[in-house]
Image (cartoon, rainbow, N blue to C red; front, side):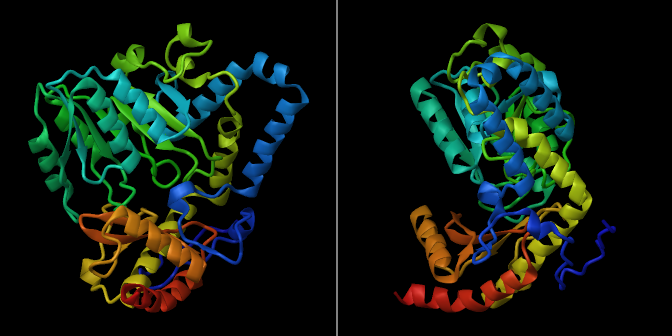
Length: 403
């Protein structure tokens, strides 16, 4: 494969990566502009997972009883190396939501304590924090972080919101799902550690989208999904835990590896479907075969192009289009007209309308009293998909508001 041209103007769409679109089995009649929600699994990874399923069904007892633990360990080490995480302190889990619940139950909470979130936190993680605090008699508090903001402003606001002695856990996103905003997690972790406050970094969108060295972040807990941007089958994530917390991590369900402790007690859950994990290295291999730097450059440039053409179509001034702190980010948001999708149910309804009427899959989120259209870009997307979406969306929104 020839080197990819990364010198692409933000005004012009990037050239397609040769053959990349053919790697996926997506419906050609749908513009799938929402890779960030559930990912899309390359055909080669699908086949690798199916071979594992076939292996199971040829002799289930042999698969589960002979060497499964070693295969999980091998996979975990492969994934941890890709992310720069300590394999001995990492565990394969289903997703970031599962990991958040694991962490929340492992942090001791009493009635005077609190868990601190930001207003960019993912909905299910916030729900898990509220349930844990409700059961403990503790509270959840939310710090508002503006968009846009400099890294220094974000660190300052988080530092000011910490309550030493009361804040028992800080949960911060590395890339926020609703707003596609990046956070300086290394600096935020350091600020929290000044007061011995542990930090969970929700990095759901990081693996495969951005290079990362998990160990250098020094978070107490870090979790990232592999099934979004790293081409793994759905149900694959890695939880990394600092040494001082590993003995405190308990699985949500007790199974046969309980006495082995973390990470084995978390990873082994009896008849769990382990095929997504075991096929994950094939996803990483696919990413590297395409040329990971080329994929990142393509996706970031295409997301920027999509944001520009949709922003122009909706008459959003260029200066009001949120720009990422990391130029390699493959997700961008476009503010929707005032009054649209200001609540989660309204956002969900609008997303479904767009899918039904325009055959476009995208994400619509309500944040800060404003609806945000979130665009993802992946190697299977083409500039003309964003162009057509931009041409047709204004009329749909106009009729939707009138209705």
